[in-house]
Amino acid sequence: ANMLIRGTQRRTALQIAEQIESIGGAIDVFSGNNSFGCALNLLSRDFKLGLDILADVIQKPTFDAEGCEERSNQEFERQRREIIAEIKANDDDLISSAQKLFLQAMFPSVTDDFFNSEIRNLKSEFRSHPYRFQPIGTLDTISHLEREKVIDFYRKHCVSNNMVLTIFGDIDSDEAITSASAYFSDFLKGDDLIHSIASCAPKYPEKENLTGIRIVEKNKDITQSILFIGY
Image (cartoon, rainbow, N blue to C red; front, side):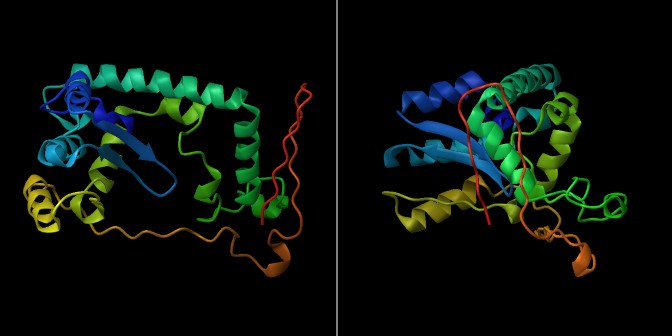
């Protein structure tokens, strides 16, 4: 998601930041297990400028622009380094590490030791529940992530028929709809997407399913302890 505000066909990352700062606004991106996006806060008098910037970063990020390959690769590698540093910092944080372990126990994979060897060896669409993963990724996935993969993901998911645009504040609703329709009029529509989350438990006979209490521990040479309990 950070790549959205790291430059567009019309604006560099610095220009985006300077324009937002000049009007006392703030722009940020977010990502999670189910969604990613961009949030913009500004005064109502600057609504159209803000909408222009928002439409620009959503529709024309440089990783999808011709003639910007060198700049895009530089930004991509810079983001990779920053994310790797953040992952390492999270791994050193006791609460973050405990939360990661907790989610892996709450949303297990059939490759985990909770399941017997017969189940672990089966190939199934239910092998890993997506909620077990951290939105930021892992050192392995980020280190091997290719720019082309990010572009493919963007082209598939960042399309008009998969987008929710929310406008809130001191703005006339008719004006907001008219302006948004104008700024996003060229936003491409993608293939119809079906959003579904596979069941956490693999579809095996009840006696083979994961049941009962699951306890996961990770010991560190420190005096503090963290305990997570979930249902």
